[in-house]
Image (tube, rainbow, N blue to C red; front, side, top):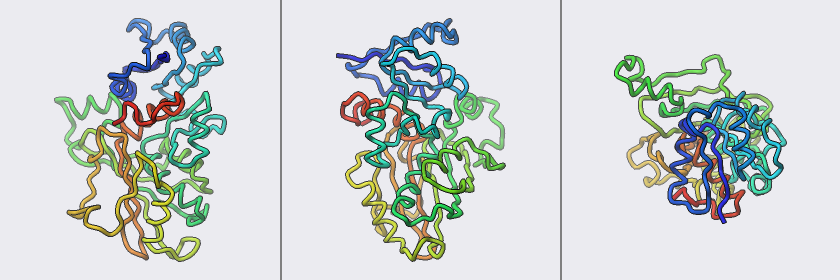
Length: 315
């Protein structure tokens, strides 16, 4: 029997990608809103309460408003905004972090979909905090590069338009005031005492990202080698389908010495690399900002909530 699904904000980048991942599925029935009513609160509320599952692909304020419309206890929400990611009453939609995360996603009526940069950062840092490698007060730094699709429809229009600014042909740093919207969840989910220094960069390609966290071994809780860190991360993600820790120290990992950011575009996969040396360890997480960093992760959570194979529609 199919379940009823409504996407509030299905015209945005994340909503459209969720729709793509539903192609060919016969276990869901999509509820559609007419174009002239897509901003009508009463019509949105009607469809939300008709659904079994509603995806919120909206700005934060609109997501909070949408949740307030729910008056039907059976409606289960997957929110792709930042509005509920640090709310302990909501499941955090990264099932590979722990068995507890996966179980809370399975049983919850409210799931907050992770941010794209945050997914990369948390994939690297959370296991090391849990293993006691990283003290909660460690002064973490994070560098990341992403395709321009992460900026949404407006940025896509600028980068793909005829009047594209000259500066957009190069990588561009932003969020220089250290107030990026993903910082609260990066700190909260990892259990850090302080937010990391975060240096995001948007570049002139469509999708895919690499998130990088450097570690200075002498500042860790005790002496760890790069290989020790690789072993800890490998054990943490052992048996996971979408998150893989790549070979340590082999040519298969980076045969030409370059780590491209767009390799996983179009997938829900995430690859983790441990590089550097025993004094300066470089951790990298590669994913698609529109896949494991957005719509792919949301569909994976839906599958877990429905009790079907979590890879459905994602491979």
